[in-house]
Image (cartoon, rainbow over all chains, first blue to last red; front, side, top):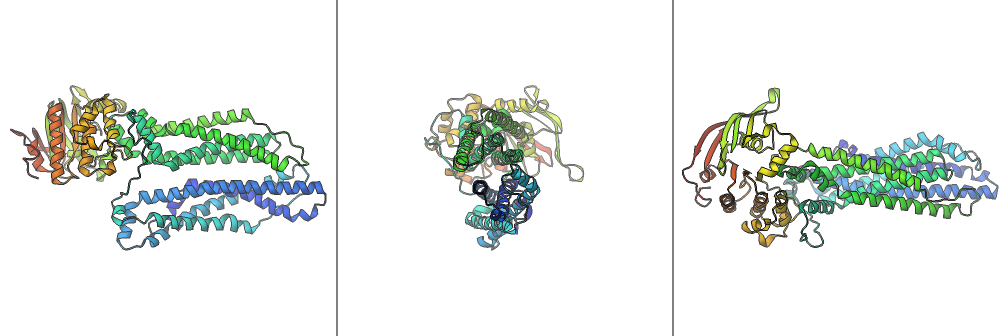
Length: 383
Length: 230
């Protein structure tokens, strides 16, 4: 078996994504299960309304977070599996040449499910570390009776075991599909080059570096998604954490939400930019061999993502605004709870934008420096 | 004129150290066609890489019209490659997501060359202007890489086994194109090859073995790509 558990652990992005999803879901679902235990003690109709409100908003938060992060994890996992196959074509081809069937090789990809296991387990444990403070923050208003924290084993099944099995299975099936290529093609490390042509077939007379910038963008749509997602996560969660604070939510929730957003943004941006640089290593080296400066290389390879990033930020900000309005309308409009009116927090959006600009441009600066370290001779060393 | 003096380069350290160049000295005149001939591991590719500014030697100097490129900073070395040299590699290294026109434009834009399509025409690819590298044969891809290198109007062209991945007919055709272009443009040409027959096409032949020059001679007359053996 050439796929080792070490390869699965390398999938830091998937691991962090799972940990964040499970952390949020465990906090809310565990709390909801524990709340159900005290439902019989509530006799006051107004308290019962608040009880239902807390439970349904917890369920919704878990569903939205779980679904959004879960889908992103699927995209990320498939991306990693494809990337693994693309970078290990000769080894996989030799296995096929030796007589290993596609199915037998694909079965080895179950280990990618390990990253899901590690990620979900970490998220689950973290949730229990935060749980006492989370429960305390929910009891702060004194409306609902005290609830004690319990370990609910069914959550282990739903949030750790099921996802691990499902993602391991997905890895196996997807790799099986991707391995269906001629053996020689794999051994030679070549395959059909998927070219995404420009709308006019590349006949437009643009300066070379602009052409290169556009073709770099076109060549990997998944990376556009990740860069977009990074900015989206950052703006949506950071701005929302300010709004939660303003609406009287617990500081812990606000800080946790902002922290999750920043971690997700950094992880996805790291994944995307590293892949862009690695995937274009030969192109960058060739440009430098010909005499293009490091600055020009960086501009051609990285700058195309900038507008997408800031569009992602804008959409993320609007999304959180819409979500807050929806939450307020659905859950708190007719509630007995006395909440301040929600308004869009311009100051929070500006702070989030400023910090994102710093983060993003710092990333670009670091990776522009990395371009300088790509050895020119690597281009010539290949057979 | 390129003056190479006492060039030395060692890869690895301690017991794993391998001396690729052991004090190589050579002079290449403007417009010369020099072939570096030698077996695998003789140091010919290392010499080409150090003379072209892709790699730094451990010691020695490489002077282009008096300027020692081994003493240049990375940025100045990049600017030197931009202005002075062109490269043609065995594996072409075309950019897969750009068509023939754009690949050649990569070289042309560096020299502000707006007439680069004439070069594409000269290498016989004007019909395939909007084809992508994966849609071309090996010989056609190598012709694109020749056009790309020529489009930047180099003073010196470095070729690393340019026919190594081609069959005999295509290889002769490619060599013929290169020599025609050299005659027209007048740049100096340094070609690495292990094919002794190609040496008959050069002005000067430099034979290398174990990191040293073992023989240098000049041909009285240059043969064409169709006159040499293969």
